[in-house]
Amino acid sequence: MSKGHDSDHGHDHGQDHEEHSALSETALRVRALESLLVEKGLVDPAALDAIVDAYQSKIGPRNGARIVARAWSDPAYKAQLLKDATSAIAGMGYSGAQGEHMVVVENTPSVHNLVVCTLCSCYPWPVLGLPPVWYKSSAYRSRAVIDPRGVLREFGLALPDEVAVRVWDSTAEIRYLVLPERPAGTEGMTAEALADLVTRDSMIGTAKVAAP
Ligand code: FE
Image (cartoon, rainbow, N blue to C red; front, top):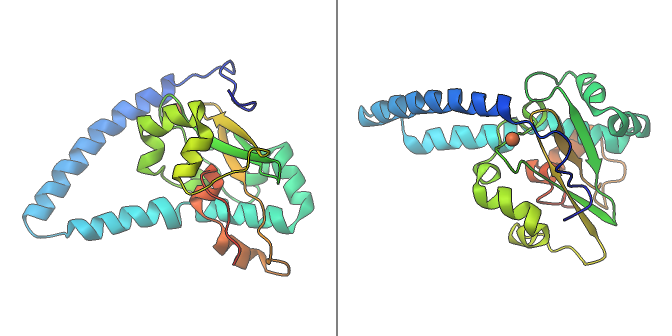
């Protein structure tokens, strides 16, 4: 098991499981409404999928991307972020449910971090929005811990053997955000332009940030 994974840190998912059962009732109602709207020809299911995808991959993770871009541009902010992520992130105006206790883990040329929730789908909502479907899948949740390099290869990220992989298990108490490596060729870019490069997956750890 990789170094960063610690199963003895008080993994209490009780609260989340309650939320999940509340959500599942909501999900059922949403499904019923969606079926009815589609049946009546009032909405196009493809358009709904596009909206959900926008929240999952574009709008939600923009907050996290601004955090990463600022950390790349401002060494004092980066130091604060790595020391006390919750307050550094709240200082940018991002706080709230599922983001109360944040920890930021930094990727370097020798260490790659990957975030999972092995028991359910704990995820830092204020900075990443809604978790993608694969993050909640049992395949990802189990295999990210057992075979992180294999999982990363399936995401198209082949890491050399000399790069250590650390897997962080999110819980109801602690949510992790990966600070990806700043890509080459980005010298002199503004924080705003840098934020546009940062993807959701790079902050979960299933991707790197590509050079512009
Ligand atoms: Fe969880």
